[in-house]
Image 1 (cartoon, rainbow, N blue to C red):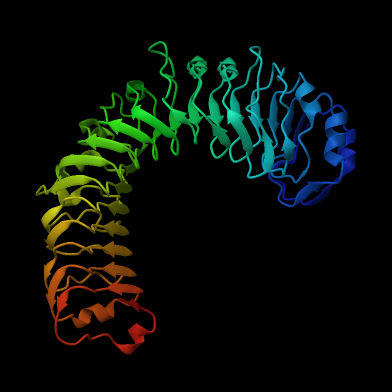
Image 2 (image 1 turned 30 degrees about the horizontal axis):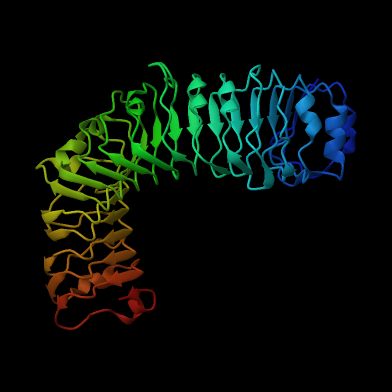
Length: 432
């Protein structure tokens, strides 16, 4: 017998009669906001429904400790108790559930415990403990999870290093870990980790160079190694399946590898706050037509313009090149109709041929070497800063027509004449 009332929109107390359906093998009540078990209702359900293979209660208020008896149900295949308000300690004893394929307990809750210890005889495919208070060091027994495809233990309280037994997880496709340290284990053979598509290892303390095997994963879609302590150069990627790269907040140096500019499916590219250097030619971006987010700030990059580069990055929305060594007069007008955020502050830019962006919301050009009259943005801006430059002359009345402007910073320049800002603009603008 199967009962699926997920996303049904019911709320209130769940009838205790449901625990009398002793022949149920599948029960799914997930995602019914406001639904809850009466006191002891969940315990009665677990005690009476002994034939359950699937129990999905995501989002149902249980507010109970994790029932130890669930871990004795050898028939259990899929268990989702995420967002249920579980608390207390998850059992520390070895788990003998040979058929269990999914274990999902994710939630910002007080549920705590060590990493679950599974025997070698297991079929677990997906485990999500994210945002719980599970803690301690990761055990070598996690290498027993040889069928595991998805592991998410991010935003927990785990510490220490990744056990070398991780190399046993040859079926893993998605790996999300944080708050760990040391080095990332390398697979023993060339086919190890070859199925990995999503590597989310940001906010750790991993050190050393980025493991070379990460550049050779044929199905890699997302690579997040941000907020670590990696050093050395960024290597060349051997395959072009990547859609997301975040290597920000490390200690990487050298130039941006050529292979990154061949990743035609790349959408966000975040390399900010490293020690990257070299000349970045705008022509290199020609193939990155799907790029929407580019952040190369806080590096030591130079930028050279390519005469036909204005048609590049047709879908770019956020572009941050601040805190680099970009100089000269810029004519790179990418994202004319799509760019919403542009930060070129703390560079050596002396001027612009034009400010053509029709969808711009935040335009930050402060702390450069801008000279001459004030460049006038289109009236879509609500933040515009050119402070700490060498602009001069009178401030054009056209700036008053920027009807949606809320922050205008013209400080520390050499303007002369009268400031022509109408009173109705002053009612809604923050002027620095």
